[in-house]
Amino acid sequence: MNKTILWRICKALAVLCVIATFTPLAIPAGKIDPMVLGMPYTLGVGIIISVLLVILTILATILHPERKNFD
Image 1 (cartoon, rainbow, N blue to C red):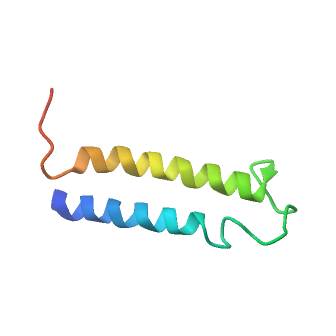
Image 2 (cartoon, one colour; image 1 turned 90 degrees about the vertical axis):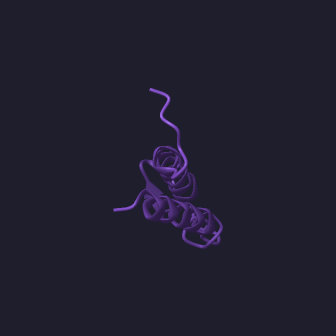
């Protein structure tokens, strides 16, 4: 697959993660009960989204179409 297409997919996924951060998926109204990874739901989902964003950033850096090899 072309690096440009993969890079654009990474950008789109990053935007979706940011949008998901501010939806009821990550911030349910008045709920604490569901636990994720032993933490309150909002904290657990926020950490998972943050880790996904870091992974997407690393992938996008590697896949950037104009990346120069510094090896």
